[in-house]
Image (tube, rainbow, N blue to C red; front, side, top):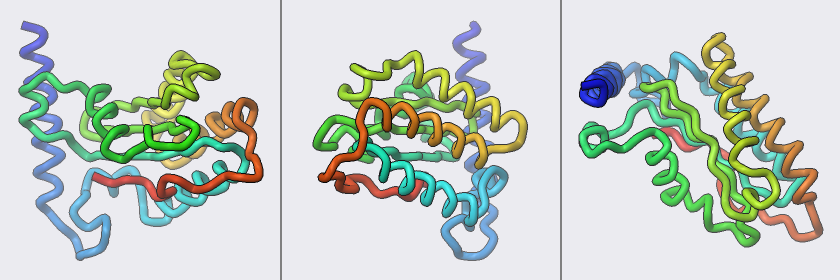
Length: 184
């Protein structure tokens, strides 16, 4: 029973997010993402992009922020969780495909208010999932207090400290993944 309730709640959340997207205002990159605009302005997204770029100058890791307003309804029926969707995005965005296996994904599912931070195997050996979960929780607290951009920036800062400690920048430090947040 509780699983069905959970599926029903998730369906309502994601259908509502999809319905909001039908009301487009303008034709810019955020025009169809009503729920996204509730949390981030274009300026916020530019600041996040800059924070990722600045972060990556200090270490050999690759950070990627992915924000989805909703997940497809058929994936809810198939039992896909936000964590499983984050893993899909980790693959889709090729966060796993860095030379030193040092990619990190901060995945945010707005419709369900879920935040998942995943890292490639090179990171897990040094940092571990427990630390990544703590960073996700801190970002979530920031979202609850209405400071979504600041919460992500703080999460990037925390990851930067860890990555700089374990994977300091060297002579060779290519930018392997786009610094811009993925919006979907």
